[in-house]
Length: 451
Image (cartoon, helix red, strand yellow):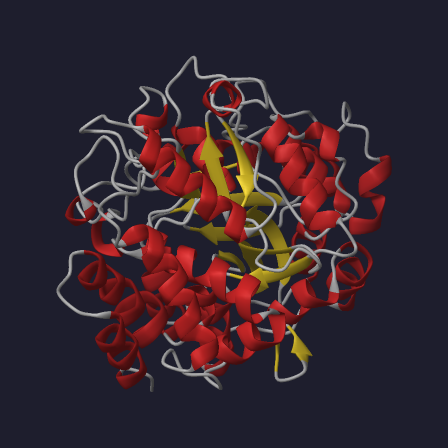
């Protein structure tokens, strides 16, 4: 998943520049798009025929992900007559306001987080989705996913792709050699951390390696740590109240999560293997953060499923490979599974039958299976065949997302007001780990920035 603004998965694979690609000219995979007479159009009859129509899909997605996105429309275009222009630029999130205000909005946009969707709806730019889109979402997504695309009771936007956060990357060989089993609870994880720290006499080794660095977005990996612990320690209801601003950062339910994260991130004996002490966390990029696992300078790294793309070529990612991952464990062994994650949403800015056809197609299980089979992404679409994912971790993440009893909580900083979620929460985490402010000062500072 490519979040150019936040610098998350997109930094691993994004290309420079702006791509404006038409299906008439590019299929992304090197093979020519099927001609109308050659395509199997049985699955596409419901979208109708719209010869000569063009629909722009505006997005922050770039690079190989953009190429794959273009390819998903090959047969759709051949069967419906709609040319789909997928326009990718890292400036999309800021330029959409300029374009919409000037009356030059794209027909559709892939919006990388619900907060931006809500702002665009409030500004009157986004139009309610067609009933065919809502029907697909009712069939293929959970109510919580539908809720992220709903504003004030009106459904606007269907989910598209997703990521599962809160994975802890480790070396299966190291764990086996040291007789360590994957922890099932947070207390067990802390016991392992203490064991690893006490058994090593290396000057460079620490149990954890951590990287907050991400350009202008430096700090977001720290917010992911806190979000995981709020969900696991305080529970889904408190998590939702916190995201909505009903619980303050300084309230006990949230403060306990900061204390738990601080037991690791602020401890010189526990971090930052291969890079230096606690003070090196901010200067270490999230891309490089977990790499010392491969040379034995650290044992664990907290990062999302998309971190799979960061391992060097030749690294085997598997339960018996060079690296693998387990989810951040529960604090209560009896609690159900709960995960944090992110996702994207397709919103409509211009009315039209061809526009509705494209938005409906992108909300279907057909599109989800086409895109996931091309590799690099996952989706929470329940019609998705998990076996199509390009890796074992991708398949595991899809199964988690599709499980009926999984509680999925959207990335909190993406849902909070921008002054908090993508500003004071990020920067406050940086100041905290370098020792500029205390935990009390951190939570009070973030609370003071709430609109």
